[in-house]
Image (cartoon, rainbow, N blue to C red; front, side, top):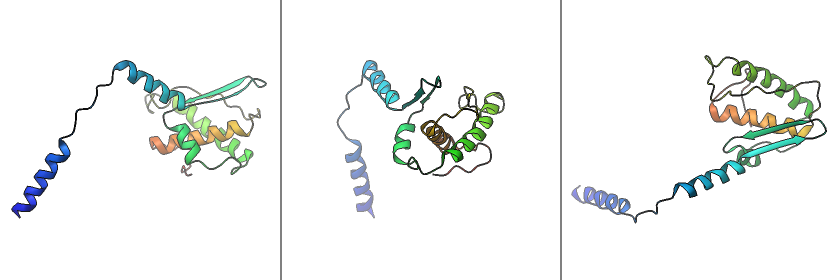
Length: 147
């Protein structure tokens, strides 16, 4: 029994004794954070319809490329219907900061069902709502988010 304790103490000592790590300056850290933000910014724009969606969410772009269903999996009508329901719920939560976390629901989304935003916009917006629900453990409009 003493050998087991001695081995555990020795292994704990060996794992805890490592070389010192270099100190990262604030300038380098902010540049790294900026790069991370740039990589996690998704912009969707259409000059003809004069709209722009900017999604700045750490991890969303990676999630979209790795875990989301591929483009074409859902029909545009399905995406438009779900997005409209999600947007209504989202905007209601923005207007109730005492009930819902204002850090999660900051800005209203102007999404109108009479405008054809195209497949790409609806696809990315739908996947953002899915990502948001899974990441922050929220449920918009009673639908269980799934991939």
